[in-house]
Length: 276
DNA sequence: AACCTCGTCAACCGCCGTATT
DNA sequence: AAATACGGCGGTTGACGAGGT
View 1: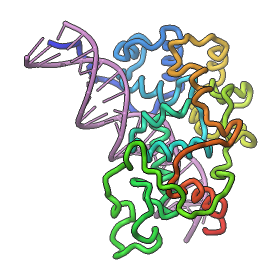
View 2: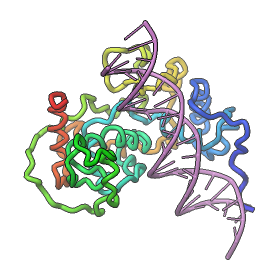
View 3: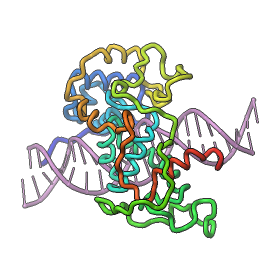
View 4: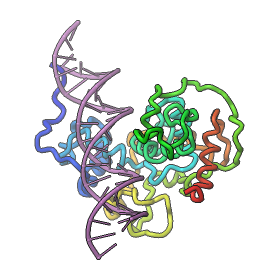
């Protein structure tokens, strides 16, 4: 025989997490740290399987998570890393402090992919699409994503065909969301008083995702005053700072961009209202 | 105002490599 | 060495909200 079975899977709850469940999980992990996920639900009094707890923690409750849309610089990093690594979301996420693989994967599928296609770039190969972009499907059969099924990923170490003769823009002006500061990484919604849902105006950084409404400020407040055990962090603050994209302070990215992807995106974003 | 369609994202599923017995 | 569970990863799904008709 091998190990003990994980969880009996009988009577386990599924679906969205409630604030109460979140609270249980967070307070348990705060006082005990991350040990074996199998034991977590039982010890924390949750009717979930360990896997579900781990997912909830890593994708949502972890204290070092950033919230909100990816910044321009982050998006840029994702595109570049995706070109090198392909759909290795966890690897890509490891280069983006405070971001999860799930988050990046979602952002890629819902935003970046579309953006690239509209610009005539194949999101899989990162090369120019062979066919004209979206509007004119050949036979009206399939969406363009289906026709481009070349093998993922350009070579690791990536080809260095510099310059597609594209236009240079100095700013990579995608979305309007500002970079978060390191301070914000630990509970970005530390607005203490106003619940994220209610703070309709300001801070684009705290957007809807800030808890998805699930996290209750009342019980978060004391937690935020605690000292976080080092083991709780997947990445140390130093690492975060080291890995932090330069955009926060400067603009010196040095990615290879053979097809001027970033410039295209910049231009696209700049004009995309008028294009619509 | 009601209904419909589309986009987004949290959570689940299933597979794979590794650890444990 | 084999069998089995664990943890992690990537793909997919479905609920929900926003925008359009």
